[in-house]
Length: 415
Image (cartoon, rainbow, N blue to C red; front, side):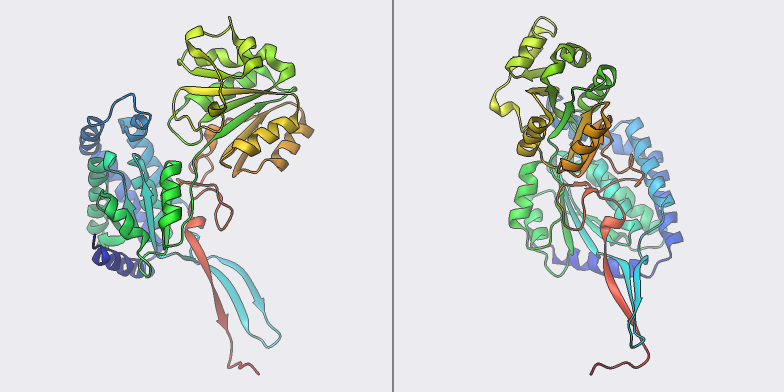
């Protein structure tokens, strides 16, 4: 698939962005937010056509679904991004050499950012707003499941940008076909970075096939460890929220790890989940603790496949451990390095857990559902990076910049 013309126009649009004042950027974002609400009916009609092609039982259905409340939330996130300061131009450091030469390190945009994502039409808004605020052009490659939703959304954004007298090629939706992914991954010289957002299979494919630099946003295999000093009321609330708030998102809880001394509290920790028909896959000791205390139809014996699985569904596994080291070893083996939590009233144990767990986000007595750019005060997010180079955790404005050095002098030459 020949897309070089699209890539070239995006590169040109990125160059034009560098000349804009931030006040213009903010005005466009406010307009996009207003148009999103005003034309929510059109967006939901397109979304309904996408939804009609997917079974409601598919875990991706909830990710694909747009509602009036979600659209209002999207518009609010766009306005939040408009209210943030752009990191572009920020001076990170300045030194003066003995010869009088001044060296400044400043933040600059990547230029053209490509994002590949699955059935998440809200990502189209998030990516545009964050890229635009950080003076980047963006190329969006959504999945075929959300084709009509994405077309309606990006069409709305491009019209709003053009209405403000700017080049609409600052945002482009690529064809939904797989060939467009291959073209994007090979767009060396046109695209500066590619960011995949979706399943582990998508992320692995992009990492393995891209000739363009990749920032990974990983799948979320998330654990919560209920320690021997855990508060059962806090634990029940945290587990329920992390598991059931939205099961199809990457920060949802997959495995509860419980200290063996607290197995008597396991029914209390799990019982609220029964109201949402959560199937629990319990190891031998946890199964014995839950038997007769959790609906039999929802209680299953765990297998090895029950652990290290991102369920994206009303399912959760339970692992029993005898000490903190066992809990940490289980997390080390099965974690995707996304979000991990501990419930404990022991400050020393909490701090040790936070120090030793290798993950982008580590929580003590807090639900993993908070791993989200907006919840962190970033306005929105491109995704949750689980890698360690350049970006880690919720990727927002500063993660969409790189740096360059500005060297100022007065005729210095090197001997």
